[in-house]
Length: 415
Ligand SMILES: NC(=O)C1=CN([C@@H]2O[C@H](COP(=O)(O)OP(=O)(O)OC[C@H]3O[C@@H](n4cnc5c(N)ncnc54)[C@H](OP(=O)(O)O)[C@@H]3O)[C@@H](O)[C@H]2O)C=CC1
Ligand SMILES: N[C@@H](CC=O)C(=O)O
Image (cartoon, rainbow, N blue to C red; front, top):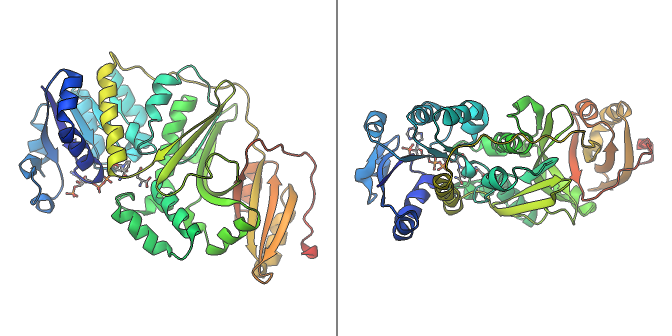
């Protein structure tokens, strides 16, 4: 018999429990073995008294850990006590399947090596992009294939909010509340809104695409809280749609990346990914352009990834460390931005702009000339963007855009 333990019984693990119990005949036939959920650890038992399976629940870690498990699904979230629990289990050679991206991003290196040392398995398919099977695809199906750049929409909550806001007539707070009620948001939604959740997911993807575990300092992070309603209108002037985009590449020395609200052109593969859906876009010389999209949050899609991860690890004879894949050479980092500002800040903006090297492509004034949007190309992203950090400059993502080499100067006075 395969004995299963569940750490947490919220959105994700209640889905795992229902998924297993609803399909138990199929699973037992598929595995040629009986399976059973033997214990579930939660924090506050009183909240779960009305459940049919309440006898399986305990709020005592001692009571939970005295059971023998063949696999444990962790979905309590956060660093502690999840780190202690998983460390304990891996050390006892118990395979762990987790949805906890914060834990994997911050302690993945340690947990991976523990899993290898103890010849067991740490699965984190559900930690990135909910129901999209991207982790095991990268691990198993793209072992040889070089990835030069990874980008994506990696947070269901913020994509849901941005979709509903762009459809019109909704407030930020009401849409956030809806995303929380639907089970998409983190316990503290600041992690979604300020991009920490995306940062963790991007770090995990970078580990699989480029070989090493990157540090948070290697990424620029801008929260979607920086968005104002008139930014959406500015995008419309250029037929650009706002999305919350993560992207990273290996520049020949290290992995670099950003998490930012970004403007997306019509033909970009991430543009049509709406609501709680996520998309992962991989680019590589041999791979070409690879896009995977699907639900990025929610009970059933995330539980699907957890259960598939469990089946995946049963098929593997041993745990292999991910092959490091590094592409020699650098990826061009010229980047277009839509620079947005209020005309009341004109002096400050003009001063900042004089200090950066850029090429102006198009200027649009709107809202009775009080707001301005400028499409520019910055020719060395990191220093320029630091210098204009007081301004709102969101990246513009295009497909096959040929960057021009000429530089110009913005004629502010001509506005
Ligand atoms: N929701 C989603 O769509 C997705 C979530 N994830 C990740 O999955 C994890 C869980 O998310 P989700 O299911 O939404 O969270 P929920 O808040 O819905 O559930 C968390 C569960 O964990 C329990 N728990 C929390 N802290 C402890 C603790 N210290 N000891 C024991 N039990 C504890 C809670 O118990 P109690 O109620 O008693 O506090 C609750 O049952 C997070 O890491 C999240 O980022 C990943 C992909 C998608
Ligand atoms: N809060 C997360 C849940 C899934 O990872 C999100 O909204 O994407």
